[in-house]
Image (cartoon, rainbow, N blue to C red; front, side, top):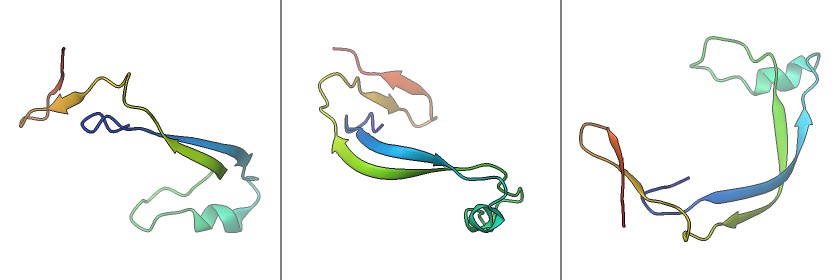
Length: 73
């Protein structure tokens, strides 16, 4: 969700649970700068996507201190 630009990406796909015994796939999903090993994972086969209409997305902005505030009409 991108509140500032009032856009969101919707994904349509099918999810697969990676077998906990599939150590090769789990190892391939690990990141070098993250110390914990991957123990469980889901893979999503994306079949479609859509950039959604901004009509009902209320803009949320941040000030310089990082605090959130909503734009009111």
